[in-house]
Length: 559
Image 1: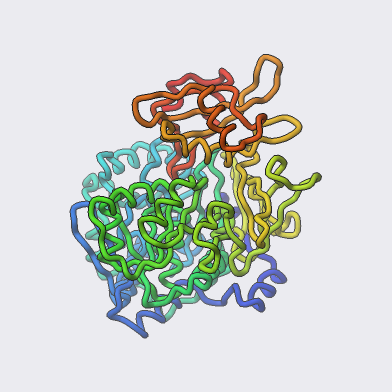
Image 2: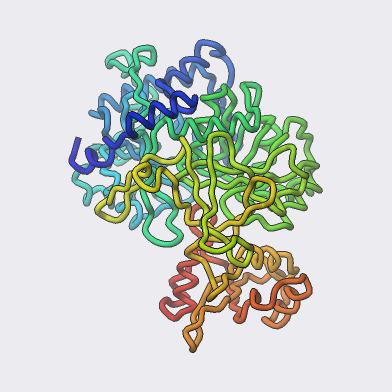
């Protein structure tokens, strides 16, 4: 193991903390391998993964086949020299191979580093260098982009990267073809990788996920199988997910929410993981119907497209009982149209890579409670809102989370500066979000600390954006601070126009006033863009908009 890997991958929770979370029932002595063995033995013919492809193909993987391929993939990684603590990076679509590769790395007690397929050369090189990856598995071409060529271009600058594996068509003589090497060669017969012989260490770092970086360089989040288990099992318990259910998110399996829904919850509960490699409203609707999905979680924009697809062809969805939105503010319009379309409420879930799925509205809340709340803490979590002044919508406090699902540590910057989470503030994690109490034991998010706008009193950005999104001429909006000639910070509404008539600033101000909004919350500037800059997970990159509004970036840099 190289020095960088040693510092990052040998971090462990203290013995006292591990004992506490074990005695509380949140951490275990086993991990994903034991989970997979359990379902392989109990229900070998049950479908573990139900995967839908852009070309119409549907691939089902039983628990018996899943376990077999995990052993084979683990043997392939072992043949490539992967050992405990070494890093396997992967950049793959939502295919079953991604799930099996993750568990195979866990069998070897290696560390997996997922990278979304939307990441490009500059960021890819940095992430692979920071992860100090030994092996990188990628796709040849995906969504019109040559990922294999990109991988080749960065590999030359990564002396620690020993093997490049391509799922598809590799370059002969220099790369390994995934299908032949991983899927078709019985390495499990030659190497000590049987699931029944596994010695698991669920307290060791098992995954490094790089955050989406809306306000700077991505942060590496170090998790263990126990931290991920705690977060996922709390959500599964709250929603009573069982082996009879299918769970689905359209988000990338290379992303934190995808990891929860494609890997952890299914293996904990025996449920089916539903994968969709290319999203559209109609494709998502077909997956919901054909896989008989019970629980779906996604960013709000996915529900807009889902509702539009239902309008064209209403399908029977008798199994569907939970629709949850996450990742960004939820426009009230989306909440209302989901209720009208599906007859069930759109739950609000708050989470982040560093802490997992922490709060959520519940089945016993009013059907439209998401209009007022982002939920109560899920099992295992403690939450706190801190402020030196009374917490109000005009002066929200900083939102903190503590519990067994909070990540073990984070690394920042090119030098991977390590911060062990439990060593600060008695384990309380500063989420960087602003929130108020919802009056029923939960929270209402008001924005990010980095997005605060105002002087002595802060403007409740989320509320202003939500109301503006209800204006018929506003298709998308971000409220961002800018500095005027008196060095005061004021609010600018950056909008994407819906339809042909572009609204003027005064029209939007009058609209907000008519809705009862406080005068000093109103934007004092309006800008229009063809589209707002967003990161790979759909969050608006407000740091780019802020730089542009303050004359520190050109319009071209927002593309």
